[in-house]
Amino acid sequence: MLYSYSFQNKKRDLSDVLSTVIKDEPRFISLFKPSEDATQQKHEWLEDQLTGRSVTVTAVSSGTLSASAADLAKLKVGTLVVVKDDSALFRVATVTSSGFTVALVSANGSKTAAPAADDVLSIVSTPVQEGSNPGDGDETGLTGQTGFNCTQIFRKDIILSGSALAVNVFGTVDNQLNKQTAFALGELARDLNRVALFGRRVEATASARGEAGGLYFFGCGDNGLSVDASAAALDSVVVNDAAQAVLGAGGDPSLILCSPGQARVLSNEYKNQLQIVRSDDRRGAYVAVIVNEINGRGMTVMADPDMPDTDSWIIDPAGFGLASLKGRAITDSDATPKGFDGIKRMALGEVTFVFRNAGARLCRISNLKASATALAALRGGN
Image (cartoon, rainbow, N blue to C red; front, top):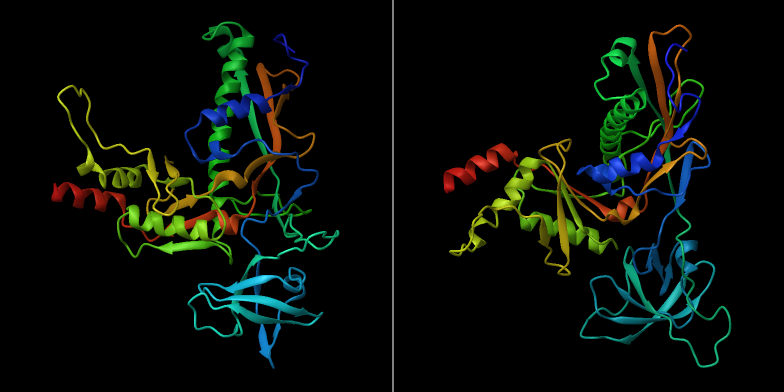
């Protein structure tokens, strides 16, 4: 090697440094916290049980209600249920391997006499008698359903030529390498951000490279939540519609992801509510947190330049995670070929993204009015 430096024969773990870079990025990727290591390229996880349990009636015959085996396992004799969007209370009278029967125990102001086919019965509770035994209570825990994503290999080559080393802009060789490594990790964080948004899920094979799926892949699936804005501007009404969808599915809507232009549109909705007093030396209409009208909690506005301008997402980020394949976290090591006039180091790692309960924690707001058009209309109105 023509040039020497203090860590030329060392392999450095950059995962902590990358976590710091990601944390400081005001982008979507900053929502992903380090998760447990993946043990294989197809990284699986168990979905959480977010909503109260429910049973779907598939058919009704002579008073007997049919349901799937998984739903029947949730019921016991004495379990109390209500039909979704109705107040009548029913008690489970019998449960067999093929169906169950119920009896109306309290009308609660409703005229519903019995559940019908395709009704969703929400389980209220299962009253337990005094001196109960194991197995008498409700069973709860993980849903047993799994989700998965695939790992993707990321590589950045850090190159310092002999001329760059001679110029000595950043001081010693160590300082120059650390500076270039920081640049490479910043670029990697931006790459990860775009994969976390737009990536597709591809499992690695002999002929295919592994790719990690992102927000649009998981959020736009068959069970994904969505709200069509019908070419209207982004405002508190459509935001609360999407927040209600997430809350109804069991998630906790706490973040609004949109483009910088749409963040300005949303802020301008509250412009008329500003109060200026004589002592103020600043004014403007920047809104960072919006209180939703469903549960009164705040939702942080995150403006990401990579977001499509006509889309926005209402998100519960509690299910997000960034997992490295075991033993394949981001590291850098020497990659200088013999006789090369300079130094080469290689930053390499294999990671994936966890989107736990994506069908309940993500809601897409699509077909928004373009922010430039919406801002022009606001400007004209003012």
